[in-house]
Length: 164
Length: 123
Image (cartoon, rainbow over all chains, first blue to last red; front, side, top):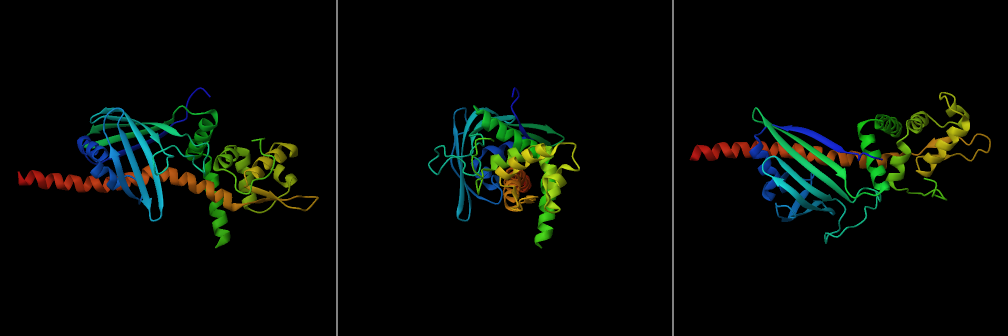
């Protein structure tokens, strides 16, 4: 596989770039929105190349940890980091039991562009130093997200109807 | 895929993703959602041979998405919903992670804009 699979998410925020940047890079704000429905605690946050963002997300009894190493900080235009989504509570690499071939690290790039008081954001994640299995696993999950899975969801709908 | 010598009761999700990555296999699953079917019945709507269908079924079986009946003659294939639900919900969670977080960011930005306005009014 010559090209790495990418996860890309575009979003427009109805706020100027400077404000969006602050919400992303001030841990006080970041922990208020990062993690869906989670109680997020930021244990460390050094916004500089090589700096760490150690993040804990908690849903009741369930907790998830991730480690981020910032690579590029170009205020207020661009953030680049290495995202380690599978770490234990001591921030050491730990295998993901559900997805053993999920890439251990994702190169994450977030860019911000302002127009008419709004901010266009693009988030891109690509597997980093990944094995062939990790690349395949990520590619298949991404392909599933863009297409194909329509039928997966249709099957689920049928089954859920039957179970009612 | 061929490294599995037995059918794992709880296969890894990447095995499931791999099985689902093929359009013919997804079509087979769609057909099975309507009811159990034999290899012959499954091969009918496709332009492929019964042995090819059998191979696809084996992949689905190894991923725990399908099980085969014990009826010696027909060995009807049956969809197993739990594995499918597991894979679909995992993928949904990944997709929702950023999406839901950004919904929360939207709300926060509204508050921040409001606060900023109030701050500048005080100056």
